Length: 428
Image (cartoon, rainbow, N blue to C red; front, side, top):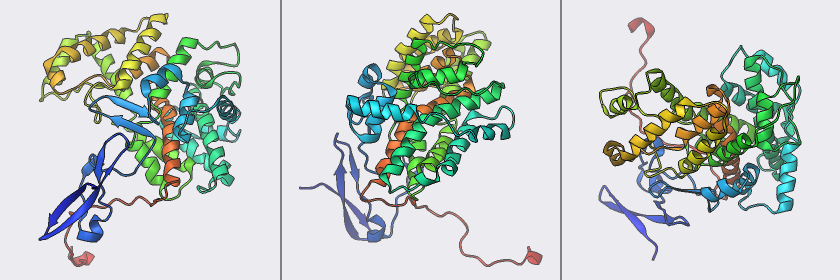
């Protein structure tokens, strides 16, 4: 017998079905709540609200589990490539050799941007934030590819997917080059996805640039770890914008802006700034541990704990190993790593952190890796956007293909003034 939940309101009893996911999570289907009772739910931040059914990503915060299409993130980080992971997320299955070759070919050969797009960079003021540039330029792609905006045409969507995955690294690298006054390099079709980005970031026309394979691998793993994370702020933004049947370029542009916020994509930047603050103050980790424990102190440890994960973030375990490997091969010593290790050790031993389950999350180490790769701090959110792009695409695509497709339209509880008459200006 199917499970139901009963609601008693004003003497009447209403029943609502319980729906169950493939891995056991349950939800109350309140789709008919308002029509039956006149009520809506009130859930600030949607922490207890499921906005959709999705077959893309499973996340168990209590157990520290993250699956892409059922495959553990640990296996993908070890064995897969970013392009293969992107294919998995978008199309639901790992590709065959032929499918992966074709997919990679399309992405490689769509990586150049229209020459007129370069003019955009001249129009921006000096040293703009790369996230603002990335979102603006991604949104502008809809003006260059106006024949690929039909959200119900599979072929147009396919080409748009290729263009976005291919061009975002180029767009991102160009925003950095513009900020430092260096020429914009064309993509190199002989290189892989991550290596090509690093070359566009740090290469110059006047000399050859050899990409460090360890650095390229570290970036590849980071991109995989960030590729999707269920219905977070930016992903929900992509879905909500897409629910108006808006094109994929615009939906991703909106998602990039949502990711820009310090509570979302800016978290790893905040970690580096915190570590730098501790280092500049003499590196006394104990002092800052006490400040974090003091409820009267405004200081907060960044990169610890997670809104969803109540145990170890599974991505942090993978990225910690990668951070050590990269930093061990680096020719320059990273003093912030020592601060980071002391903080981690304290968090794992102190009862205060254990009781509150404040474990290091993925942002704690990702910032260190980006810093070791010489990527400037204001580019960190853009790196996050590059990684999250396949997830945004997959979620947007899944929404468009949903047989129960509806435009997103949350309700509210109005708390403003009651009905009142207009007061003429001479009587105010």
